[in-house]
Image 1 (cartoon, rainbow, N blue to C red):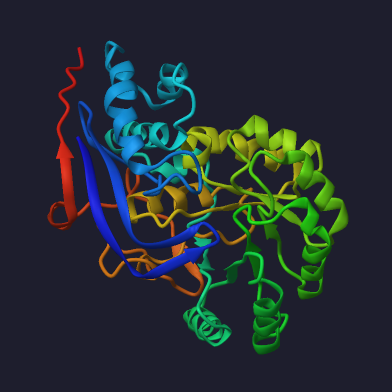
Image 2 (image 1 turned 180 degrees about the horizontal axis):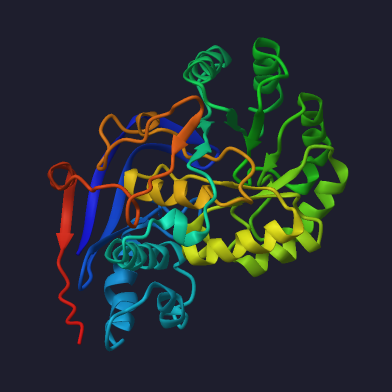
Length: 366
């Protein structure tokens, strides 16, 4: 079954890409022979972060991806999903939702947690929080203060031209240099801004995330040589192979891993393994997921190579009511679910309340 949910955010979230006040969530609910699996598509309402968007993801799943999986005779396994869908170019977030649903069903039936299956080594993971662009610096300081008081281990600020040096200076002056602080540009700058971006070095940031266009690996390599602040890539990293190429070319020293961006949690695992062997630090990015997508991210972040706090904040950071049991921040960490599959229970009553569309697709497994 494909479901669309309307999930209002606790407060609007602004980046250099625009403002989001609600999430149009696309869920895949797949009934396996022994268990029901769930997957969440992290595409946004508009194709701004990536070429994908919710309406398009819904259409490509219905018309192109599911039909290819339905041709498979017998029980479908999670590691078969990516090969079966490889003929369809792109649409990584849509593919991830399908793979996640199959994987969740497989693991629930087998009684194995997703974290254990992926190779997780932690029972809790460090949580950071992403702070959008605010109307004023005073608003920014108030917002950051609330997150620091809540216990988040790291603060990430969204930046763009005209909203970078002064907000950072204000945060450092107010909270000091003991606060783990990083920034995310969402590709808002060009290589011509290198001189300006070098001013960020004085703030001793953990990293500068995705300053240039996603397709400009060479530009990032040039920029990295001009800055002391480590460059982290996000939008640019679409597979494990691309990640290794970016590292080899000196385009980044750190990688933000998003399963939806690379086409699935199994590909994210491959990316992790390659980077872990090379000693490249990783952290798990977020896309304002519900408890379903958040559970998968927490499982991924439990792998040993994820050494930096991720954008896997508590449920109440974004939603007044989640669609699973809420993830709660405890001493700066989130507990890794240990139950079978995702380890969380979708609340069907809540899901039905916020469902705006559902479509049941019959798939006869023989």
